[in-house]
Amino acid sequence: MFPQTHPICAVILAAGEGKRMKSNRPKVLSEVLFKPMLRWVMDAAYTAGIANLCVVTGYGRQMVEDYLAQTCMEGLSWRLATAVQEQRLGTAHAVQTAGSFLQEFIHGDVLVLNGDSPFLDPENIQNAWRQHHEQDCAVTVISAEVDDPTGYGRIVRDPDTRTLQKIVEQKDADPDTLQIREVNSGAYWFRISDLLRVLGRIGNQNAQQEYYLPDAIRLLLEDGKRAGAFQASSGQAVLGANDCLQLHRLNAIARQNILQRHLQNGVEIPCLDGVILGPDVEIGAHVRILPGTILSGATQIGNACVIGPHTCLHEVQVADGMELRYVQARRCSITETLPPFTCIAPPEHRRHPHPHL
Image (tube, rainbow, N blue to C red; front, top):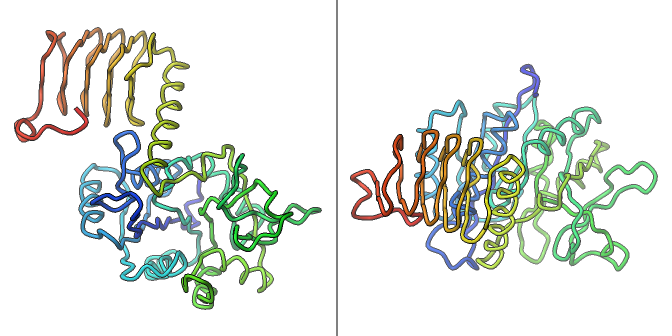
């Protein structure tokens, strides 16, 4: 989709602690359907066609870098770089730490993403860049319309041309602006040369004394550059999680979306009770999934199978025609129907079973 002559990259902001999660790991490693939010974001960018990614780390840096090292071993043709934000001084400061990475793509565009917003999909990423390119914008904000915009920055457009005028944060909005339901997702396409020209001019004259990336839009507009806003097809594009209640909401939304997709593809799920399917699970034709079944990782179910009840599979390849009832397995291939209550795990996991199974 992206021209080979036009360099494209992505910077993913993943330095936050997420204190309200009350977790022993960085927020971006919190899981939605058994998959870290960071990986949802990385996969969306890669599937959209962006193979050069830089992850900005900070809190729990070693845990994030260990996860990224494991991800690099999966054989995908992407390049993963990291930058370290030693002090969390705001989103613009986070992007500044990736300056050397951005210099490599100085004649192209960068997609800036939040590492805890798992539902921005590849199609919206591509369509936003297409608008960004066609309108010759220095920056294009990815926005979405939501039922309750409380807490989000509002997208203010010119009433005649519908071009972006500014982003107004909740605390700075007047009553009329508060009525706007189009909000900032926190994801942006920037022309890198223009971004680097204004990053150093962003100030921290605010209550938090932090450097905020939306200020780059104001500076670019003041410089006479064009700014745009691309409205995503779903309000889910802006959703993130700051605590476990919000994380639960993301899990519920993702579960419903994935179940609906498989049902529309012809998978028979007569009762949804306890059925949880991960985002990377593939299911063949004429398959029945029974209650209490959990499929996670890159599990692949062949055609004409019956899976469940109460079966948990992680990274398992199941051949056509299998019936698996009360079975637990991980990282294996199943080519024959197993008796109920079978448990299969690689030797290194037998003492310490994976929490997903």
